[in-house]
Image (tube, rainbow, N blue to C red; front, top):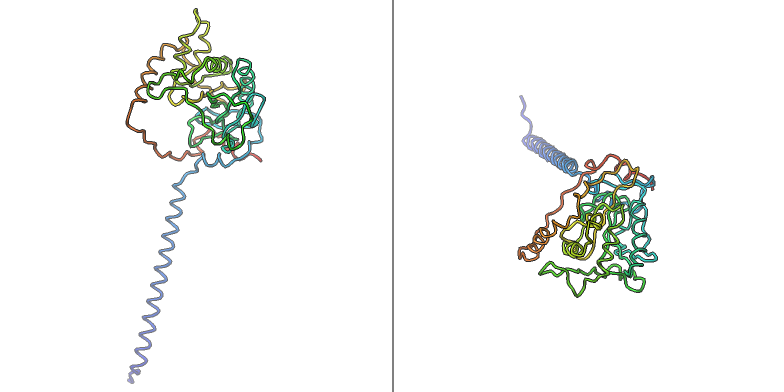
Length: 315
């Protein structure tokens, strides 16, 4: 039997080895691509829709009948109305945030309060955050979701219509002494007291979050025989409200999608002020800085089902 030439054997073997090498490399590349695709798919599957980003992306309200859906802490708002940037006796601050939206009842409340406070000597109301155009959760508020919350500065409006830049850069002034947690007598006036009283006397108010020192001051001047109990009960002492009040309204009558918070206990609530003063004084004197935790994503499925329809509604 005749043996093949050595040259032929080497060429054949080399070709076989090249095919094996290329084939193996191609197989490894395909396997690597499949593994990468699998990791991407797993990553996408694990990453939930963050409702805060979905709602903040909506720059206009849902074209639906006005309704507060869910709760102040877990909800949204349909058919929200925009509070104009300026009115007869109010101005909206931080317009770039696009948070001057609310349930129609909140718009009515702000306009009414602004007129009433002006008549009582408050130069004009400065409005902070309300809700986004469709409500929903935000990165910097636990509430303000259902269109029934508004932050109102404890700084009266100046005598002129603020420019866009002034609205973005001007700051609310704290009326509380940081060291003592008491009201600063050089800043707090009777006009401040009258303004807070005006804000609380509306029967549609559920509660108003205020610095404990504010309620302490108003409790000291309360009338006898419980005449002031109804509106004083609505004032809820809480830290972080040294330069503004946070007004929260009751659900509008007939709005079956809205859920009220439990009402404050009977009485005027003045008996709890001393405890709150101790809490805020302790916080004021603490040298340990608070460490903010990175917020976890909020799944859209956590919100009421109707909030998905609000999110998807036109325009």
